[in-house]
Image (cartoon, rainbow, N blue to C red; front, side, top):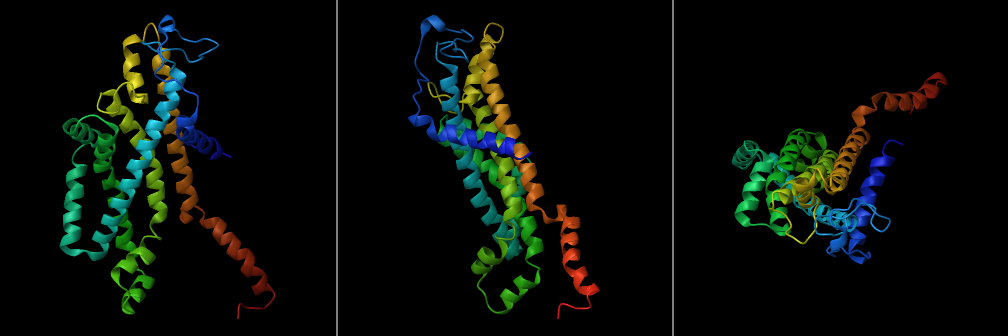
Length: 286
């Protein structure tokens, strides 16, 4: 039951993002008589400083954050997982270089490095995706490397090596499937981080440019009218908080669900229920 609420929020967010282009929205329509009005029967979230409907801009901003999150997490997950897996499995100088590169990236706060990259490349959604991907792959590479260092010593991997299985096949068939669960959990938390990162870059003017809508730019525009029109900040702020909170809760639930160590007693109980009748009846498994 507890997973349904965050999952419902994420699915609603994704649905709105996908349907935003076909919905009858007018995010850039200017209505001067309604400038900074808080709410009305026609627009219950009110209007911004240019008389544009906040509700329409909120839905279009959801599409922006969704597309950036999917692109950044997808790129970072693929690149980071492959680099971490290959480096840990091959070892030697390749793994040493990977570790040093990860240490260099971890020495800088991720958001500051993303701001610096976006500032050099210039504003725009494409540059936001590149900047956030450059700083996001490190977490996946670090996690994949740590998992593979333990997985490659298992018996089935040694058996695959003994029969002459090529290293690429060992990585794709015997290692990556085993480390997919923690990577999926990391990706769920990564979506929340990317949404915050995109909003932060847009807040600073380094993200999507006007008149395109973004939750971060909506919050930036609303900060100038906090005392007279707080709804300009409250609406995108609550949307941002809801999505990030839902992704974090969903990540916690996925971690508990995918981690077999979190249910040891249930597993032992099921095994005992199946084995005890055989022992009591005097019949062994053979």
